Length: 156
Image (cartoon, rainbow, N blue to C red):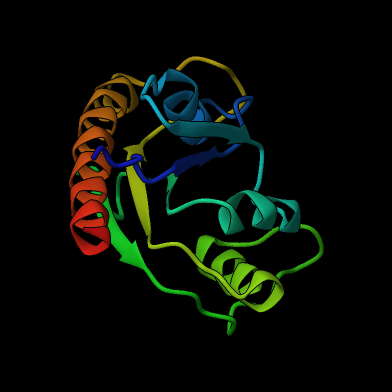
């Protein structure tokens, strides 16, 4: 008997008009995985909770300053409601907490951050960001494949 692959959502966010800040959206648009819903948005908003409530795992993708980290980072996330959703924007942890509060379900989640150096007005990415996007896609592919295996083993 075959198993249905757990559903995954990849949410890339950032401002594509501020050069490297658009990394998250670019990665989401480039992801071509089966059974992965890719969403590219300017910012994280409460409306995304519905997509999170209806998935088995989630990956958030964003840019970070190269001074904070010179490598693509992957970290697991847990819901955290201490970060208040200000207006219409959220961070991944508060969005997960809102999803849990509204729907009673929060998928396992990861945060992939890609270093950038140019956050000025413009649409061109720096060479560091371009390289980071390729690395991020590889890491996300591996992460989702591994997470799906673990979820399928739990279901078996």
